[in-house]
Amino acid sequence: MADGTGADPVIGQTVFIEDGRIARLGGEPPAGAEVVDLSGGMTLLPGLIDAHVHLGISSDIGADTGYGLPVAEIAADMFANCAQTLDAGFTTVRDTGGIDGGLAGVVAKGKIPGPRILQCGPVHCQTGGHGHLAAAWEPTHLWDGHGIPGLRHLAMLSDSPDQMRGNVREAFRRGADFLKLCVTGGVVSYHDELSDTQFTVDEIRVAVEEATARGTYVTVHAHNNAGLRNAIEAGARCVEHGTEIDDEMAALMAERDVAHVPTLTVVRDLLDDATRHGLPAELAQRAQGAWQGQIDAIHASRAAGVRVGLGADLIGPDQGHRGDELVLRAEVESPMAALVAATSVNAGILGIADEVGTIEVGKRADLVAFAGDPLSAPELFADRDAVVLVVQNGRIVKDRR
Ligand SMILES: [Zn+2]
Image 1 (tube, rainbow, N blue to C red):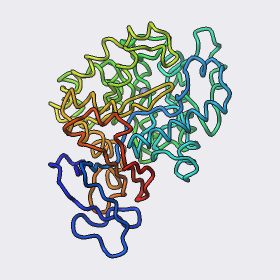
Image 2 (image 1 turned 180 degrees about the horizontal axis):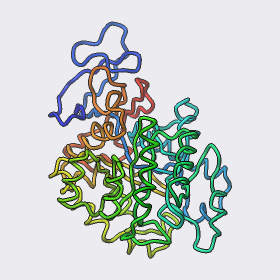
Image 3 (image 1 turned 135 degrees about the vertical axis):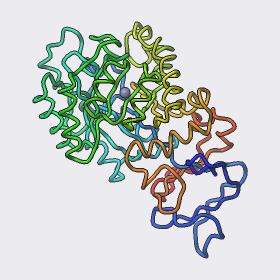
């Protein structure tokens, strides 16, 4: 067992679960307890956390944003993605744009299998900014027509501080747990460059004010440091991607306690074949610099003491390989660093470190067991067949021992 804190693994540990929580570590099981035997080379870990998912973008992106799919199919793809995510050992995710409280609610009620979902609702972007995935000639006033109330809303457009205030209040009304703003251009973008900054400091500051008023925070999508600097000045607490983070930026982030969630898998996937996601092949060129940039950024953040979480940022169909992010991070850092990022560090970034992220007394019993030891064979992290047991809130939801 590895507990997610970074401590050395323990062999033969018993974990006693009561009322959905970890009640005791070690000792003999009490009489009458259901015993789940993981001897025989299995490794028990905290349930994994993906801090950057898009459950609302689970279909072919071109067909979806081009009104080419019925709502039933979009919903079916989202529900299947939820189930697949849990099956891969991820018991919690942070959705960084595209769903709303509706999807999180049906999973929480147990109507469909899926991970615990914290979500920001739509991303907030400027007209034509990253997240505004309309075709170039689609009139902007039609954009909101892509939203499906209670299921999916990809992005809200703001072009002034007042519009931002109205939009983020609306996102909170629909159940957002935090806010996400796009403050630079993006890889999957049709109308901008990665070097663009988006939103003014004043616009970002309004979102931070509204989030702070509700006891939560703003995270930002940022590939360049100019946009990221604007966001930090405005009070953002977390950055997604962070492709250009260098020693100077990392020092500023450490000083302001801004967390960093790098996303390697999506970049690797787009470099391999963007068309698989229903995106134009040319997008691969945009991803090129992002790959080495994010690897360098991880090292810079680490060296400065920034909290570095982990997110796969998968988009489009077939998101069953979510664990690839741990495999890639194990190559960049180490398998243990990848595990800690995907468990206790991510739980902290999500603001739920008291509840999940480690195997410790009092925490929710969200657990995953692998056949074999992913800390010595990290490719197992991405192998859903190797995920032999998933426990969510103390309940066994997958058992292939
Ligand atoms: Zn994303």
